[in-house]
Every structure is written in C-alpha cells, then in structure tokens.
Image (cartoon, rainbow, N blue to C red; front, top):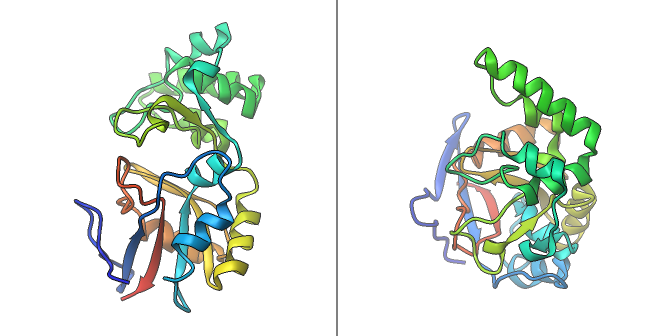
Length: 230
C-alpha cells in the first residue's frame, strides 16, 4: 500500500518520543443499508499488518446502523428550537446549534439531563467557563453531527447520531482484520475513543496521535485509517 496523507495533514507524528504513521484509507461513500463488516473487508483488511491499530470514524458505523436522518425528515419540538438558540456555534461544526440536532439530543439523552446541562452551562458561562454543557450531556450528545457545507453529499443535509455498541463493533472488526480496532469521534478540535479493543493507556495515546484529525473533516472520503509505528 502506498501511504499518502490527506491535504494539510502530516503522514507521520511523534508522540511520547515514538513515531507513528497515520495512514488514511479511502472508500466509496458509505450509505444506509451498507454493512460495516463489508466496508472494512473491502477497504481495510488487505492493508493492515500485525501491530497496527485500525481506527474507524463513528460516523460510518452509525450510518450503517441506520442512525442518519435527512433534515427534511426531522420535526423538532418547541423546546429543541428554544435550546438550540443558546448553543455556541464554532467554525468546526454545528453541534447542537440547530433545532434538528438538539431534537436528537433530547431523544438520545433525555429531556431532564439536557435541561440540567443547559442550566449548569448558563450559570458557568457567566464566570467565563465553557464546555460544561457537553460534559454533563455526555458522549451521546457530543457525537451528534449536523449538516455542514463541506461534508460529502448526502450528509451535507443530514444529521448523524453516535453509533450504538461501539465497543462491540470494535471487537467484531478486530476478529475480522486481526489487529486492534478503535471507533473514534475525531474532529478539528479534539476527539474521543467511543469504543476499542485497547487498554485505557493506549486509548489516551491514540487520542494524541489523532489530535490533528488526520482523516480531515470534508470531502476526503477517508473514514478509516491505520496507525502504525514508523
């Protein structure tokens, strides 16, 4: 395999005095109804080597689980419209800053927890502290992706939820490819490991290795990648 980095991303990174390659794997556009096992079999299994870590974005796992919804299908309640107005929007993603994504946060996490997160966030923002909303709302809320212009169609007009059973998915994919696997939520402002076959220390190292989002966040069509010691 000829390893080639995405534009603007380095192929190699050094973490804790060790050098690692981050090898993006280009695929076709994954659609609802696709099988994640078949996607991994088609695009990853022939490229991994012993000692590698295969990392898979949470988005394609969720899509294959039927957890993507076109904007036209979503009908936000009044509370979702109200709460979304107070979410801080960033250049890196819409988050819960539109009624459609907030609606799914209410469904996924539950109205009481979202209201509590919003109340705490409103208070702590007065004192210059940020991030409390997502800390309280949790990974399910954080993993909800809204539509952005740079996303590959049709997902530039869709909401994609976080995946179900990410740890089990990682274990199933490890049995398929023969190396450790992580399902990751990585973007241009950081990331989380949603489920993996790694120990906690290695998960923390993996987050550092992926800190600059080597898969990109636009039209790269590289929803999987390989970590390999250089």
